[in-house]
Length: 481
Image 1 (cartoon, rainbow, N blue to C red):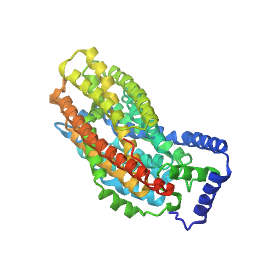
Image 2 (image 1 turned 30 degrees about the horizontal axis):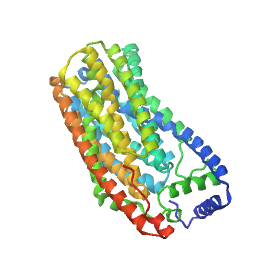
Image 3 (image 1 turned 90 degrees about the horizontal axis):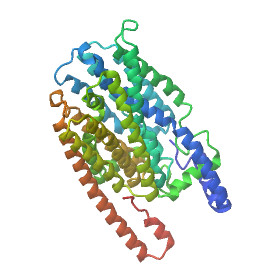
Image 4 (image 1 turned 60 degrees about the vertical axis):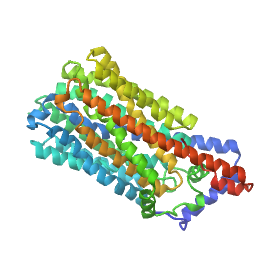
C-alpha cells in the first residue's frame, strides 16, 4: 500500500502542482477528456462482469421453470431457503472484502479472482443431486460473490467526480437489467435446446454453460481492469496526476493527505457514524421492496404461457428498466440531486404493485411488470448518494459501501420468503409487502435528505461569516441531496 513516503506518490503530487500552474486550461481539459475516454472504455467491462454476476446468481430462478425443484426433490420452503442461504456468506464477506481491496489496492486481481471462484461454483452447482448439495453450493457462491459488487462500486468511486458518479454506477450496474434480459434469452435457448444432451437435464446445462462463460471473461478482465489512480500501470504520469488532482479538487480529500487513513481507521469511522447505519437500514427495506427480482420469471409465468414464451417475455421489461436507469442517473448527475431521483422509480414501482394487486388482466399485469422492473433504479441512485456523502475519506467509504450493501442483502433474505407458491398466482400479499418496504425506505431517506440539507445550510452560513479564502475551501464541502 502506497503512502506519501513513496517516490512515485511524491512525483505525482509534484506533477499536480505543475498542471495547475503551468498548463493552459484548454490543454488540461483535453487531457481530462482523453483520460475519461480511456477510463470509460476500460471500466465498461464492469458492465459485462456485473451481468455475469447476476446471471450466475439468478439462473436458479430460470432453472426452476424446467424441472429443477422436481429433480432435486425440493418441497415446501426449501426453494426459498436455497435463495436466501446465498446471502449468509454474501453478507459476512462484504466488509472484509472491501477492506482487503482498499489495503491491497489491486482490484484488477481481486475482482476477477472472485469471478473465477464463483464461476467454478456455478459449474459445480449443475452436478448437485439433492437439497443438501444445492444449499452448500449456494452458500459458498455467496462467499465468492461477496467482494465483487461493493468492490466494483468502490473502484468506480476512486476515479470519478461526484457529478460523474451516479451515471457511471448506473452504467456499470446495468448488468442488473442486462442479466435479466439477456439471461432470460440465453436461458430460453439453453432450456429449449439442451434437454438430455450427454444425458443431462437442460437446467444443469444452464449452470455449466453460464459458469464457464464467467471463468473465461474473468481471465480476460485481469488484463483490462484498472487499479487505483496512483498505481494503474497503463496511464501516463500526467494522466495519473490529473486523476488524483481532480478528485482532490472535487472534495475527495486533499492530495497531501493521500494514504493517511488506514483501513482499520476506516472501519472504526464507518461503524461509529450513524449515517452509515441509517443508509444501511434504508437499503435493507429498499431491497425487500425489490425482492421480486429473484421471482421475475415466476411472475411472468402467471400470465399463462409456456417456459420459452415466459422467458422471452421477461426480457423487454428489463430493457425498459435499463433505459430508465440511464436517463434518471444521468439527470441526477447533471442536476447534482439524489433524493428526488430515488423517489421517482419507487413511486412508479408502488403504482405497478397496486395494479397487480387488483387485477389479473394479462395486458395490465404485463405492463405493470415494466414499472416493477424499473424500481431497481432507486437502489442505484442510493449507491451514488452514499459515495457522495462519504467522499472525503476513502478508507471509510470502502467500509461504508460494503456495510450498506451487506445490510441491504438482509432484505434479500427476508424477500426470499415473501413470495410463497400458495400466495400465487395473484401474489397480492407479496406485492403489499413490497409497497410497505418501499414506503419505509423512502421515508427514511427523506429524513436523511432533510438532515444533509440542514448541514449544507450550516456550511453556507459559515462561508458567509469568513473572509479567508483558505478557510472557505476548508469548510465548503457540500453534500449532494
